[in-house]
Amino acid sequence: MDKREHILEIAEGLFAEYGYEGASTRMLAKEAGVNVAMISYYFGSKEKLFEALVEKRTSFAREQIASLSREEQDPWQKLNAVIDLNVDRILSDQQFYRILYREVSLQQRSQLGANLVAILMKNVKGLIALIQAGIKAKAFRPVDPELTVATLIGTIFHTTMTTALAHLLLNGNPDGSSVTDEKFAQRLKDHLKDLLQAHLRPI
Image 1 (cartoon, rainbow, N blue to C red):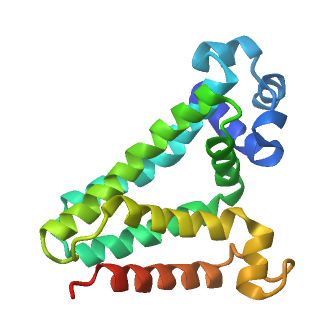
Image 2 (spheres, helix red, strand yellow):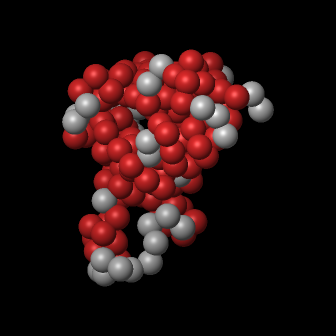
């Protein structure tokens, strides 16, 4: 593993443990066994480092969505695969995505927030294109593709990022069973597939 990748790997763990504000560049340099100047050389700033990490974390899903779009496959199979991909991706690293969600939502650092939104929109556009292709193929009824994708993403994030509320809503107890285990993941996938089938199925 080269130095840049090593720094990104260490940074992901620190951001997940301490949050964006709590993980300082000095702390990162110490944990990675490099000097601060090397971090500056590769990334320029902590903001750019975090952006590079988000790009790395989201690029795999983007490539998977693009690959699905190119395949000669039933639009419903593609949609189900996208649901599985997004649920698994977010639940597998919930703490990191909670930090990302916070930075995008609060906009405390406006330029960082804008850059993160631009990275995330690359994935969102792929999802919108997939819905549009299904409509064009007449597998899906004509709907609002952007709001359909917002429903998909919003449901995943609401149930996984607002943990205490999600526990109370889903289990009747704010300290109830985890919303990150395999049983919940399957419950969420099944619900989203049922929801989007009811929404998209031609009448």
